[in-house]
Picture 1: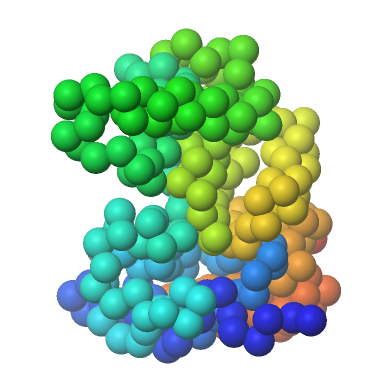
Picture 2: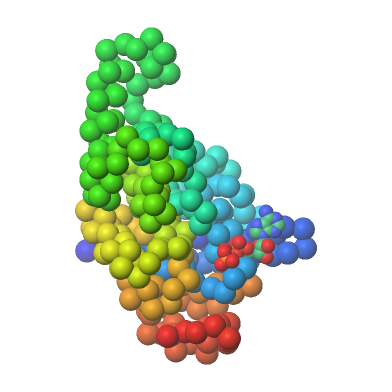
Length: 259
Ligand SMILES: Nc1ncnc2c1ncn2[C@@H]1O[C@H](COP(=O)(O)OP(=O)(O)OP(=O)(O)O)[C@@H](O)[C@H]1O
């Protein structure tokens, strides 16, 4: 039976920067296991919306709840601990760190050992370390990055860096995974592989996924439900078919191709 409490409930959320309402009155409900897309023309407010969900910005209106719990005024790291993690439109890896360390950094915040244990390298720290290494490697394997685990992240080709970002986001053990244009800059084959992988990890880790994507056929092909932002407002939501034929969406994308 479907859980009737949405995993994510966004209630009339908005934010204003000076005179600009970058996001305004947005209502979204995501249920556990959903794979949804967030689309909209340039400057529609998509990334700002992710920043609101992850605590980078505090909404100036409305509220956001995860599993029924309000996420009011929580710092981004606390929101990550509650179960929301993300990737960024512009890759934000630690370029000088190894591939595996990039994943371990995320896992670190959830590990059980205390700072004192880390500093004095008590036995519990070591068991924590090896456990962390093992887990990180598991994520790398899923993303076919285990062969590069000691490579500096900055030396990976672009497409692999994007995958590493997702692996790192997953290591934080989210319930909700937010992907900001995960396929940007990838070639068509890499993009197809990535979408397949997103479908796979969603099932494997029982994730709910919200992804921002500019490639319309792509987003229509993988997402079950699509939300459309324009000028900061939600102008449509529904199945790909419903959204594709919605006059408001067509108008918003006038000049851009909706296929
Ligand atoms: N910190 C900020 N201060 C002022 N204005 C901002 C800030 N962040 C975003 N904006 C503005 O809010 C609007 C929405 O921007 P946002 O980056 O969220 O759009 P987007 O839909 O993600 O666009 P794109 O598809 O081009 O990435 C834009 O007009 C942007 O200039």
